Length: 266
Image (cartoon, rainbow, N blue to C red; front, side):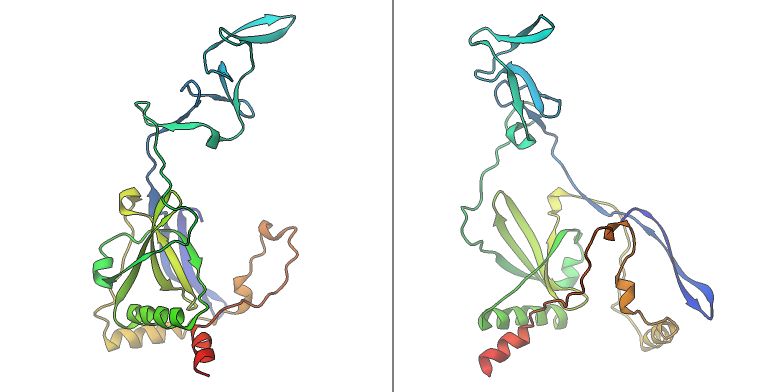
C-alpha cells in the first residue's frame, strides 16, 4: 500500500457523502546497520556483472593482472599463474563487514530443535507506550487440550483483563519478539514486532477510548446505521493480480479452541 490521501465516503440515496480524510503513511522502518559485502578472499567490494565478480585469484585471493592476447583478456596470478577472477552467484556467498573492516559475526542461536518462547504479560496501558510496529503476522494451531486451555486463558486475560501477552524467543540467527493476540475475525495470531532498538518510528495517530460515554455510544450507533452493509464481494479484487489464476472458492479451515476442548470433555 502506497502512502497517499484516502477520502472515506459512503453512498446514500445515490449521493457520495464524505466521512473522513486520512493520510496513509508507513509509520515504521527497520534500521539497517552500515555494513557492506566484500569478497571473502581479498576483502574488496566486488562488482555485479550478472554475478558478483572480484579481480582476485579464485585460489589464493591475490590481485590478478590482466592483459589482452588475440582479443581475449587473460588474468594471471603471481602465485598460481593463469586463473579466472573470483565469482559469486549470490550475495550470501560474500562476507559482510563493518565500515572499519571488522567482520559481522552471526552466531547461530538455535540448533534445529523446537524453539522455546518465554511468555510475559504486560498491562495494555503500559504496552501502549511502545510502538507496536509489526514485521509479519502468522496464524497458529494447537492440537492438545492443555495447550488449548492455556491459550484460551491467555486470550481471555488479553480481552477481559486488559493484558498483552509478549513472547520472546530465538529463531536461528535472530531474536524474535511477538504478541499473541487475535485478529478481527478472532483467529489466533502471532504479530512479530520490530524490536525497539531496530525500529525507526514515524509519528502517526493513536486514540484513547477509555472515557467513552453512553452518549458517545448512541451517536456512534446512529452514525453506523447510515452505512450500507458490507457483502462478500467486497473481499475480492479484480485487478492485474488475478490474471492467470485459477480461482477456486475454498472454505477457510479454522480450528476452534472450543472444539479441541469439547473433544476432551465429551
